[in-house]
Amino acid sequence: MHISISLKALRVLLLFLCITVGAFAQTDIVVHDPVAIKEKGVYHLFCTGRGISHFVSTDLKNWEKLDPVFAEKPTWTNSVVPEFKNHIWAPDIIEHNGKYYLYYSVSAFAKNTSAIGLTINTTLDPNSEDYLWEDQGIVVQSIPNRDLWNAIDPNIIFDDNGTPWMSFGSFWNGLKMVKLSKDLKSIAQPEEWKTIAKRERSFDLDDKDPGDAALEAPFIFKKGQYYYLFLSWDLCCRGENSTYKVVVGRSTSATGPFMDADGKALNQGGGTLLIQGNENWYGVGHNSVYTFDGKDYYFSHAYDANDNGTPKLVVKEITWDNGWPVVEPMN
Image 1 (cartoon, rainbow, N blue to C red):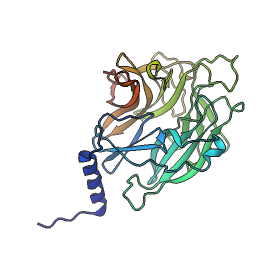
Image 2 (spheres, rainbow, N blue to C red):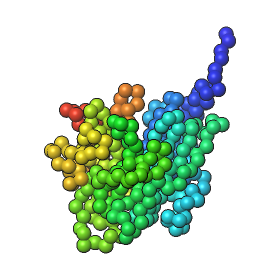
Image 3 (cartoon, rainbow, N blue to C red):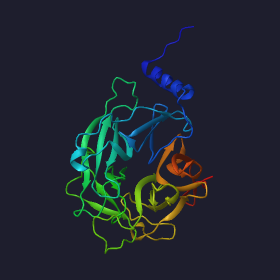
Image 4 (cartoon, rainbow, N blue to C red):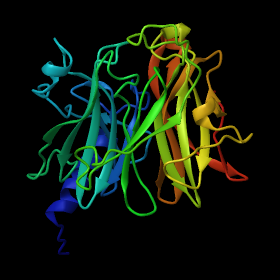
């Protein structure tokens, strides 16, 4: 019997075999701030880590860790965060016009000495001869005492007219949204900004202080007539003291205003609870949402109370109740 197979198909097959039978495949992976995308039958997961961590799977259950996106830190990072060690935070990944745009965060913890960068590739398959991340530098930057917002945790959405917008932010004076240029590499001119979510901040604090308005990690997902804004409230990264939870609001416009189920605007402190921690999980948050093969999925990390608060990957199918997302509680 004669069998023929294309080079591309062979690559997918080899990657599949590597994931499913490889000695390093894992079902319980350590991640922080996960985002996902699917290319040619393979799910790619990017998350916080040295050089941006990269995992692959064919079933959303068994994951293989690949080499990081950046072997060396982007050269521009030294000018933003002195002594930056290539531990890159909170990426976002999209496909646009046949290319993959990977946005990422460079920062110093509890400071808004931060910037969001961008790198582009034509494929996510490291075995492809076309695989090459080409860094584009800074998209947006925040500077202490100049900006009362923090340039981390990016997310890209296109509105109904095809205009690209970036939402981002953590603490300070809330989560922001800014219009991007058509090439997705910079802020559009003239600049157009929105505040899409906010919690009350004690304004007697110094502007350099992140404050007590604990919110971050916006992610916008279009479903039917609504754009849903997911975000995380309260505290991450504190082991057993983590109090992370995810809330949501919705709008018929990609730029808001986003309202919770009780009709309160998210930029006035509103938010409908989607998921939170329990006795087995100290906190759960920094989520992303996707449609894969006709099903909607929730991704995030959660701090495992039975493993010293180690952040683990959470993937749950989303159902919908009267136009609002529902996920099963943490086990």
